[in-house]
Length: 212
Image (cartoon, rainbow, N blue to C red):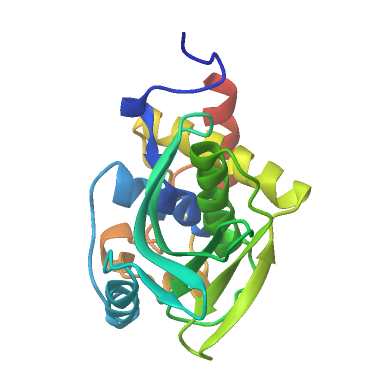
């Protein structure tokens, strides 16, 4: 019998969409609802970094098993995706590592994406995953992320909001914010500085959640 708190496999949404919705709900819908995509220098650099990580090759270094391109899913959260790297040391919990092209950010979108991977591993393997790391290509360093209660609750909320957004199939109105919009590869498609429809993104999301 299906767990009443879980979703079916055909209802799963990509883990990457959680990162996208936290960065910009409109970007998330353009990518995952309208299937829009465009490359720029930033996405190309990120693609190269991920290509090196997602080879699917397993290796061992100093007693650490390194798995690359690990397929993940969680029926409870309703998500699926691929972990760039999962490291395992004898007697220790799996340790997910996500590769990012830039540098650590002020918002928690990257943290949520990594936490979602960890929660998938927990459900799939039946073990606790207390922390992981984000490897940033700009400074070539890892940022350790602890999967505490606050981050796990945020990840669950974002997963639910993402499923609702994609299920409704409606793209939120544009909301221009220079630091996010200017480097976005979808800027020309999005037209964030065009005349806005009534209501902000926040109001749109609130109406969408209330009507679900």
